[in-house]
Length: 479
Ligand code: FAD
Ligand code: NAD
Image (cartoon, rainbow, N blue to C red; front, side, top):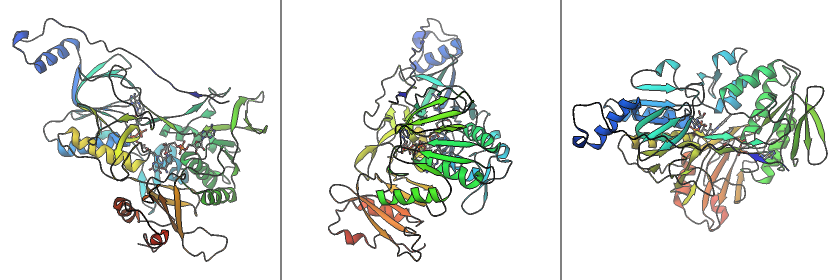
């Protein structure tokens, strides 16, 4: 079978003992903070009011709120293992593929309204001054809460007053024979986009995408729709489930969406588990599935979920959620005193669903980042927001959703009467109910701007006696 590879690093932070301090005061007369500062000077430890681990969406929004709320000479250090300053990932599997030939250089795309956008939250020039500092391509490998220190992989120690862990997740890898081949890749960063775009742009390629979740399905559709014919690119999407987005869609809708993707020109191989990817003598890759089939391909993209990045705090006791993964935080998004967590890597208590969970979507990264950022400046706001998410695959397959939309729950769907028999699922609402018949999630398919109404419905937490009550709970009319 296929085994998963996970990376773990373990280190001890070298917290050195010092007997002398470069100051006029005697050590015995110094406050704890003064002693700390004196030692930092002696050992060349830089210190910042705010240290942000990770340079993604949660990090960016936290910084935004810190700057808005702390007018008292804040100093911020962002440490990212990526080269690029914070940017948005959603366009990497959508609109960027529809941009012009210069996209790899300008990273611009048109948003839903046709407006030109750039993937970066702020231009590069905003980082690298007295207030906002950015350390690129370096990993934090440890955290020491008692000493308020983070350790970078180059051995440098940084002192913080408040620290945010916003490390997101790492794409899961599969242990194939050719796992180290440059044409067997995962997909999460802008560098991944550039590499794959350039490769596909060479033309006459066969790309195989593993995974039927958000990433595998969006990327497959984006490449196929935008470069399929133009660059003579053939795409095969393979996954073990019976249809795409089957973690979210009820079976009939997953089947429908899969058919739509096939109709758009993609070869979809459902109910097939890839057992291995090997390098052929021809230089191509060979993908082998559990039913004995195999085919040659030029590139394999492995899109089989993420593992939350919880390897930054080995010397510190931070609780990891045994069920959902991620660092456990309280309502104010704190894991320990002065340590906050936001985004994909946070396991938090969802107040409207009465359960602990971890959410891997951008609206949640934004909102938790904002709450953590504010709380780091001295506020103590609970995180009670219900984030939404969305996806767009083919022109007829797109939605917005909120709450718990696990397809294992009972669902009740309301659909607009189709005018075209070919298009049975044009516009609708799917309600997800728990064992007590309470609506815990809502998915609005082809039906936009309904998230506020959906949130109110979830917040009612009222058991539904007769499912017909839901017929008009959320409107199908355009708003
Ligand atoms: P990330 O964005 O993953 O950022 C974490 C950062 O921390 C990274 O820069 C990482 O390199 C860095 N890091 C990790 N460990 C360390 C370390 N030890 N030291 C230093 N730095 C570290 N969501 C939606 O809701 N809608 C969408 O349409 C959508 N589309 C997506 C498309 C793609 C291609 C991808 C990959 C994701 C998409 N998502 C979407 C999900 C969304 O982007 C994530 O939920 C969001 O990026 C999470 O933000 P984050 O800041 O928690 O983590
Ligand atoms: P996912 O969790 O959405 O999907 C995982 C998929 O992996 C499953 O659906 C399954 O098909 C597949 N899988 C698991 N094991 C497999 C195996 N052995 N072989 C083949 N397939 C296997 O994760 P993802 O699609 O990889 O997306 C990565 C991350 O990016 C997630 O956090 C996701 O939420 C996020 N993302 C979100 C959006 C969005 O919100 N619109 C878009 C893209 C990516």
